[in-house]
View 1 (cartoon, rainbow, N blue to C red):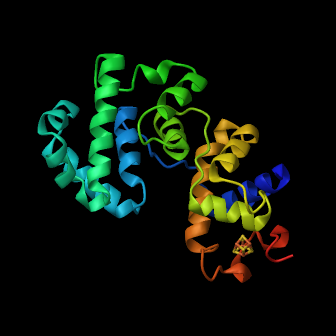
View 2: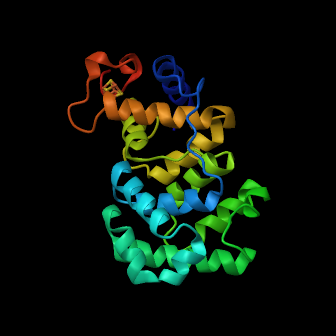
Length: 219
Ligand code: SF4
């Protein structure tokens, strides 16, 4: 993979979107909230995810409330996020495991461990994939991680950071191996904004793109 192109992307996009200079606040008081939000975000958009999370928190303000309510009621609460049956089951499972491991519905104790241990713990939870782990580590625990979504995968491949067959997890690991923690959050958000506005999946606006001079699609 091509490290020079990663830094080209980060440098050029920061000049436009400035999320490294002014990082958005994407974290939560307790990383467990971030984890559950990210579980809800799987296979849906931010709007549906947020609607489901807000409804869940309104109906069941604490995690013991959620456990008491049970899967069927939780399923109703998170329906707007889609795959409600699966997601409700996963959430209950995750809450039970965390309570068993830490004696509370919280990931604050885990957040004090080293990043390798945190990654291993989160990855072993049911239905939690590499992107979810990276989101919770970066947004909620301020730990080194670089979540790679569909936009970051697409741009990385088009510009020539990674070959076509590379998985999002491999791309994520590559970014994590070379990008300093101070640039991860802002860089991650900058690339996503560029993917939404310019390097769209269909009809990318190459003529308006600051990455075009070094993009494999254009050269
Ligand atoms: S030049 Fe086109 S394909 Fe390349 S990153 Fe920009 S918008 Fe995407």
